[in-house]
Image: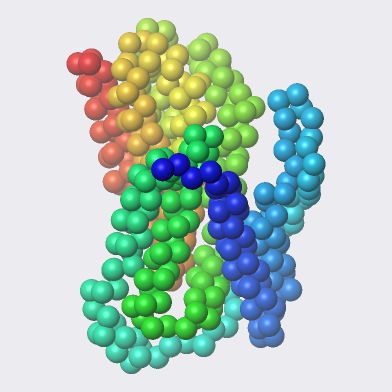
Length: 333
């Protein structure tokens, strides 16, 4: 069965839902009169929420360079600059929340036990099942949205599972979501900004520029040197970008293809190990906020770099393993 339905509406609904949650967070920050930066903090979350809600109404440029109807993209660009200014001047800080007593935490933990993992398992399984089923019922033109819709639907299913399991009020979802967002701070939107930056670098041809620069330095025809530069380049660019996927498109175009694949490297091996070599850089950078800084904030460690310090030896060792493994497999296959 194929459903003739515009799934873009569902996707925009998920973005709007996230946007309203962000605006609610901004309202809560504004209501906290003990927060000395409540004006800047509430502006940050409300602006972020508006970008999520109105993103679908931003005008798009067609293949001929003609701007379509809608909100000019420059407006969103200016709002992102405002977000950066608010973050730079430390206007986004944690509000005051009513703390839960340790006795109540222990009582609820004992009551739930291992059931606390059920929503996470349900979320993962439902995401996988929906992603498998959607291609069979979605129109061909919208297959590319399958993964995003599956994540959105599974998040709602996971939330319903949490409410049924804990018997908690729906209002607690908004309050706790606001608390988590404020704990993460501006770092919570860094992944979206870095993904956009990666797409921008790729469109601007940064990978080709890097390849042209290295062509005059790296000796041609040496597969081992090509692999070393490629893997280290993936890790370094991921450290800068904070996103392995964003670095992959740029570095593989500029280094992976001309210096490894065109020297005889198997594309499947080079691509798979090249991407995971980038994740060695993910373990080393505060730019990968969702992996390093956000967990440090949530765990309330003494330093926001604590997780990176512990991961560094493993990351460097794995980078060496990646170089050796890619070279060995390319020689065999």
